[in-house]
Length: 133
Image 1 (tube, rainbow, N blue to C red):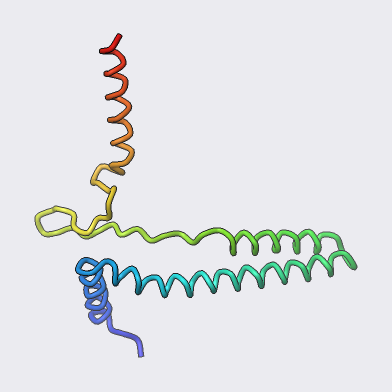
Image 2: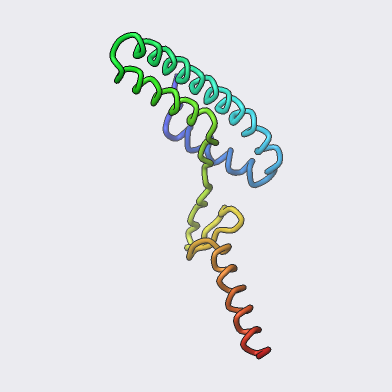
């Protein structure tokens, strides 16, 4: 029986509260999900490689384009299995006063603070070089 919209919102709020209160425990709980997703990814990739191999063998005996399609399916299956899945980014929530809560580290309102830090460091180095000369 599916959860109602209100129950889903409550569950999401509880998950966010747990992640804020005990991030280590929350990451361990997410680890079990990610392991299952990774296992599923490997299995689907292996199935893709096997289907592609079968198409290559059929293509060798019949029409060449079937073999080409089979090779493409093999490469796609291997690439799917070996590339890491995308990570979800927690963008945070906006409070009533307009402040942003729950942003992950390295995120700021104007973009990535890592890029801003790089530009600031480069500017500082440039100024030091100019002052030393």
